[in-house]
Amino acid sequence: MEEQTMTPPTSQSQAAVAQPGPAQRLRMSYAEYLAWADEDVHAEWVNGPADLVVEVISDDSVSRDRADKFYEYQSAGVLEYWIIDPRHGYERVDFYVLDEKGRYRPIPVDADGCYRSMVVPGFWFEVAWVLSEEPPNVLQALSQIVGSEKVLAEGTQPGQPAGTVGG
Image (tube, rainbow, N blue to C red; front, side, top):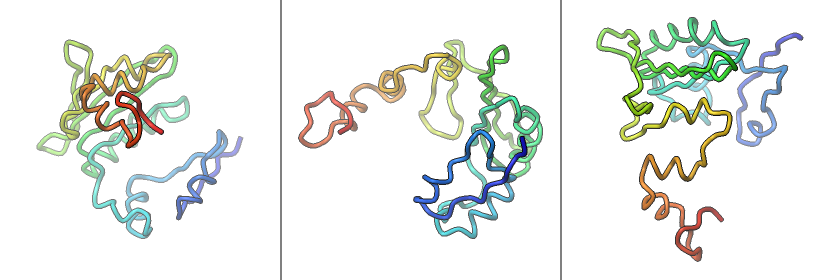
């Protein structure tokens, strides 16, 4: 099957319509993305490299994510890089943080099986959550990360009983 290249959408309505299917993948390097973002009025918030990039490996992206993008993001100055490999038989998650010399160093999970982001203050998660065939309940996971009081306070809408979320 021939691989197609998509042009990044230029509006929210185009973004909803232009979702890549199995035969289409958005292919651009990080440098091309930054150049595109500089030109696009919808991406004005992009200023320099991302603080955090998360790649989820598929069968056709292993070498790109583990080698090409690894070095591309490192040289671009992306501070934290996560590689999630959910493929059966290969399940693992690797975390890298840019050191003072501009090189990625691996960061292990803690003794509880949690990863604590170096660039997103206070954010952590159980690595098993992303490798599990059944994802965790989102509200329960969020409650563990930020505390149930905050989830209840932020999730309650005006006119809604306390303890309910959404609308």
